[in-house]
Image 1: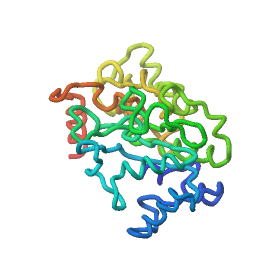
Image 2: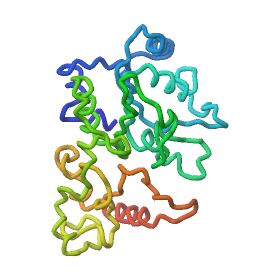
Image 3: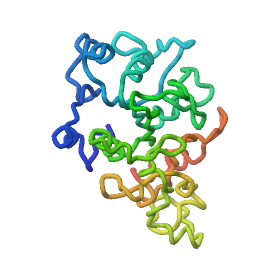
Length: 276
């Protein structure tokens, strides 16, 4: 859904201006049932080229490694994913769940969920540490909950136009063009951060959200304040602290089961107060 909101370039631009032939998308694909299975098998058998495999969502291995808790097109989704990843020229993971395992992978993890090539910061994941797509690249991680739509489309354009070689990946396989700076970069509240002038309530127009509200902008890698959402704003510009959603520790930062996440309660109280 985030991808469909892209603006620079849009999803339509990918097709009309950059020659991307979108084989299938859950909200755009025309094929259903047997037709979709036929197309997927054609990709696996080499009858239809698969240049870029984009995967969103955690990889569910449960129960007991079978993947039967998440079936798709008459097979466990993880089986399709493994087979398609090994015939694709590039593999792109979109969102925290696909990159790091996300919320479903938090302890005790009954669904045996995992990311494509990572489980949080531990490299390996579903495809394994040594996995490389046919291009020779590992899984390209575009994290976020959700991932910024323009991050997705701009990476797809770089691949489609042969400029992916110019994209340097960091140690977590994230494109540095989006993730080499902290979310704090470009934040309109930086002057308040420097002087430790804190805000104490959500949506206040002035004050830093770090000291009393727990903003994770100073330790989160993203371009949310450089490439604005909807070309307009970001969490901190709207008076809401960054939650660090592009980092492998999101959302609970290794809290043990049963820990009360008080910040969530504060958000809910604020939401209820402002929507009466």
